[in-house]
Image: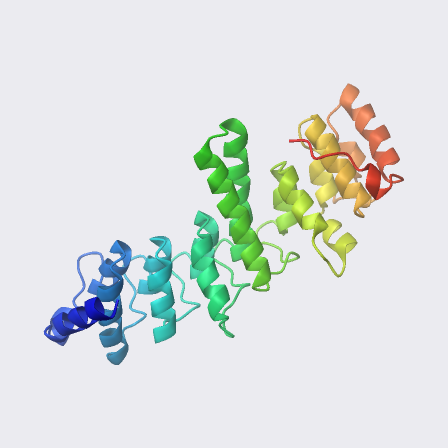
Length: 297
């Protein structure tokens, strides 16, 4: 892009500082607009000048820096350029969303790959937005929604969205995101969120990861409820039964009581399924790994 970049630099040099740093009615600078439109060479040339004037992280009316705009526009190359020029990797908008929150929320795996490749030492993978969520929480919520959409309408776009979402989760974990981090409002971990959504493949993914203390993760409480409590309270289906068996096999404690002094079995909806689940759950504790049923979803 060298020739095009030089042309962009030449054009930008002819713009006065007042014109260059001008903001429109939404507080957008020319750098915000170029980043949103994916104009890489123009963005780079302007960013160099903005860096000179100390405006590389200038924010528009929603608190988004040019980096956040580039992330939201899914422009990984511009994200790379801005980061290498020194953009604030932890800049957040008016909702407390950092670049990783935005990428996780919208399933932008190529953007997260840029952050992983650059390996910024000061990037805060555990940053909280104003809802108390980490980027990993956001990515899991996004994947839950994609999983639900695929179940309702198994189109190619729905499959691709789910694939992108799970890739974001994997990349964030590679960056050091913590599975045991609890979101602030309800204390749920990513496992609680996946179980609550009945997302069997994602639950299985978390349980099969290498954990220092897997039973500790499974038995963490969110306002008194473990993941097993949440699974037991789900609508009675074969998928729910499998989910309960899976949690028990990997160390879920069926004797744990919540704030209402209820064990998971007490939360199973009444009916024939209740007895079936209780019996199969007890049996599942003694099953060998080779006898765990195939995923049902």
